[in-house]
Image: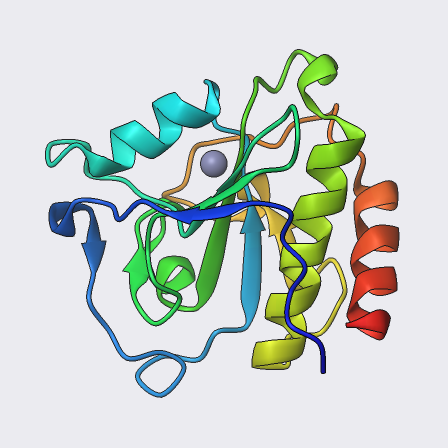
Length: 169
Ligand SMILES: [Zn+2]
């Protein structure tokens, strides 16, 4: 199996106040990917996760212009992104630069890079590639009250790309 083909990748650790140390997938099953839109820029999201007062984090953040990926939390640890503790425990959160109401942020480069990342994670943790396991933040139940990635996110394209990359990596 080839290594993941990130064009660019950087590890910018979140503040240790913003996630829970764990030993996944041994301590908690990883069986979901949760897709987010950051309602802000790539750097504002990554910087916010580094702020010890933020109280939120995600594992990965994908940049709009070129698909550049930042990792903020190790996959073994529990990022705080879902607004629902059981979902946090069992998922990996991927943020996407941009705003739900402005589709110009959702570039081909971002879909492509994010789909490669999700495909890699699905293969690694044996997560089924379907919409029960690759979900939007909006699909996380109460007490979550967020609605990203919103109606501009192209799920058909995204799932097509994930399936494609999952079979070639
Ligand atoms: Zn979200």
